Length: 278
Length: 234
Image (cartoon, rainbow over all chains, first blue to last red; front, side):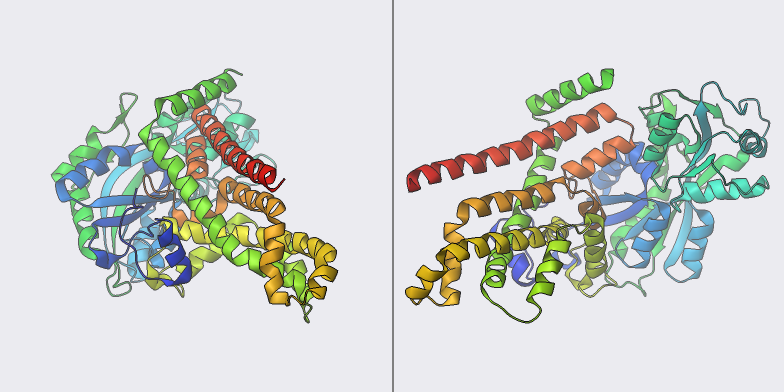
């Protein structure tokens, strides 16, 4: 809790708050060592951050405050200068972020993969598909209900690229764009016996599967690269660039990579560090 | 459904176990929403009374606007406050985004119209009964405000509780401006959204039951205070 931390002068409302002992958190100059990290729901919901951030905080004395949103919103938060650091999974978008001058550096951190889940009786018969293209074609041909994130998140963008690669423009009654996070999408898919594409981390940690099962996995096209970005000090001089850089460097360091590899849910490793793959 | 029974067990275990995370979340929820109601009331009670007493051009429009704002979607209030407090926004310098202060501000915007609009209506009715007497005593309009607010206090307590209900129940605004940061800006409603998205429905529902119990507790406390005061007044 940060209720105890220092007050800052900021007008009448805030003074009134101060009277109630309400602290307003958080500015760079009061010397508190925390950064705001904009990241995705998959890293948060799977519990990865709960496992690795305490290790970083202990080593560095820096608190990491995670705002977990869709990748699209995470980019927007960082663009507006509201987060010190960014960890997302949309390599094309990340490279654009750097090219536009908002980011100064982008590095591979880890991969996980996407899986296709669906009702256990598998009406479209995707379980024996040879590739993700074939699996998606089966679903489209059978016009089996498919629950799409539809929220411009990294997962949604990846799903759109996969439909594209399969030469399908999904649409119609069976293709349902939910505009929701991964968890809510799985909740909805479970409720209406629909197929859905999920990152493995969220799926493994997800508790409300009802009749859903993992039906298709393993195609290389389903690999999901996470990248860490440093935000431009020129565009946003007020951010805590030094602390953010320490976090970024730690993620890529041996200690950080080992922490990621050690994280397991239900006995399964979910994220595979690959900062030094090449 | 076994889940429903689970939820009650979960709620009970959460309450009885005095889970420190839960206590932190509950405390923050109460602090944010009670602060918001208090600040909103400081502005809205005199504002509502003033609108009740004065006649001025545009008064009708103002009343309609206040009534309409009672239906302001929390997510819209949250978005507006986000844009205001974002570094790229006009108040970005304050560094308030993703702090409890931002959450209070968003909830003040949600609660203020409710308290102002209902106060206006209550005070106007009361003033109808008091007008002749107050006029014969030569009390100026500005001086009437404290008198009327005081005599309407039991009704206004209910108005404030309505505001508290709105603040403690909303999730759209605090999610956007608070960011649901663990241990910093996570409140009951955003925790419920998070657990739902993890598919842990019993825990989510359990938290919902705890929230409901909490709101009931605040209402019971207000009722008790009100009853005691009423008895004393006779």
